[in-house]
Image (cartoon, rainbow, N blue to C red; front, side, top):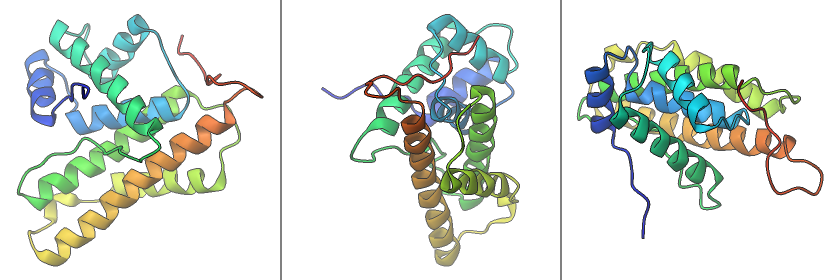
Amino acid sequence: MSAVQVSFDDLANQIVAAGGKIGPSELHGFICGLLAAGARPDKARWQKEVAEFLDLDALPADLTRDSLLLTEQSLRELSDKDFSFQPLLSSSDELAERGQTLCLWCEGFLHGFGIGKYSGELPPTSSEALKDFAEIAQLDAGSMENGAEQERQLFEVQEYVRMAALNIFIECSASTQPAGGDKPAGPTLH
């Protein structure tokens, strides 16, 4: 039986209904950044972090449920040996919208990684990928026009982001593993 998947559109509707200021891609990036940094907060702390990121006083029940599901889904996919992880992006036909959600995903990842307070020495490939994410987050995707060449370019950048996020998660998780241990000793948010 496959796990329940949180959809971009459902999450977008929940965030809008709650009055959140962030979109689903940026939220997913934030969650993935936290996880990549080794943070594994308890449920109450996780709700608080997500609410603060969305600029909400509290999360409604449906958004709480789906943000926790998204976290579990993300951790499972980031840990998957088959590299099944995919950033949560818009499936719009408009290239500019999909490009913008990729930029926002990178911005969220950087924010989450910073909040997660990774304390190890950052491997060079992860450090370079984070710099690339910062550059991608600053791109003006709104001016992208639909076309085969632009579609190919966006696909390549999206695939790079996907693999870079996996690499950061793997490298940073490996450095937070206790000697001979099976569980990450990464930071817990307080």
